[in-house]
Length: 129
Image (tube, rainbow, N blue to C red; front, side, top):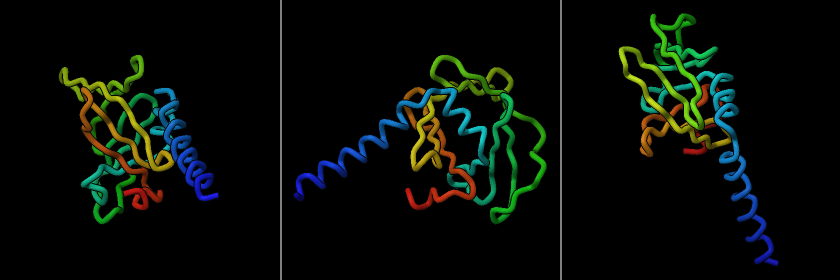
């Protein structure tokens, strides 16, 4: 009986991982666009939102953020399986997005290396750390 339970738990864990891997880039961007995201390491002071091809940045103090983003935005598009962000002045980055923690954590990989991590505001992401 113990073997059956272990196999079931392993299968469940693998199934959860596979679901995240099967999301298309469009589905990942939709998740990104439907949330407010805290920058890892600056969770109480930097928040991003993504809407209509533009990334907005908000500054805050002690997890209280302004209703108005700072001036300037970064445009983003989808190219193949990548999110392409234009940081202006010819600075363009291509990211592979990896979601975890029930889509509450998004890792941005650039050239195969982790570049930044965003945590969904008001989610239970800390339970996954």
